[in-house]
Length: 342
Ligand code: ADE
Ligand code: ZN
Image (tube, rainbow, N blue to C red):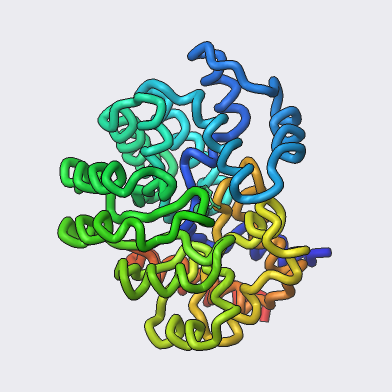
């Protein structure tokens, strides 16, 4: 049970979020509205129905991705893409998220024949509106669907040269087992030549070798999840020495993809205690809950104390792609908070 102080702490601390997928985060209310607007039928007709559908069908990362692709199929027009990111910004504001790095997994849309310009224009307009209407700064990370042919992925990354004012980084996600990072070396070389920040999902449901390949072969400056780094002490030391952020999502790992028997057994604690820089994010809120719920779990079930939580929150800005200018606001909030309670 959380104390009053902890509840207020979670609600009011200024937050960054480094790892959330637009296509996996379409709120039920928006998915239902867009499904109706576009004549796309969904296997549920209410928010509760979506929760029940997810509970029944999502048992691991692969089944999660199937569900993610299905719900994302409601998005077709520029207005749809706008509406999704605008709704996410609205939700971010309510959680006091001031800076958010959103993975835009365009290939999930490309597979349904949607032009890149339609998606990018909708997302970009919403990014601008989010700052103006909610004061939420959004930064986009373009995600490769690692299950697609490497040449197709490389073409996607090459096309980002036309969207350098929209996208700041590249990532790689979707099903991990059977699709090692190394397959997409060419995409990362192109990203490098475009001056993009580089991250990749690795060590989520596959082993630590994928993390080694991401940092050594692809030149990743960050790892998304990386929970299985804990199996490799040499890698843990390397992550510490190189100050590589693990953008973790504990509830997604434990409660959606079932990588741990329970949240308590998540590797964020031993990794943080070993000195690895971590931040926490929601990954895909409709499936696992929002960032406030993620904070609650790390405090209440994993047992992080207030100073450890402040460190996680600060890391989400300090090790972000370009959210460091929020640090003075963050530090001032921490000073005020401590004066008030200590
Ligand atoms: N896309 C959305 N969520 C993901 C996750 N947890 N792992 C890989 N790809 C994803
Ligand atoms: Zn993810």
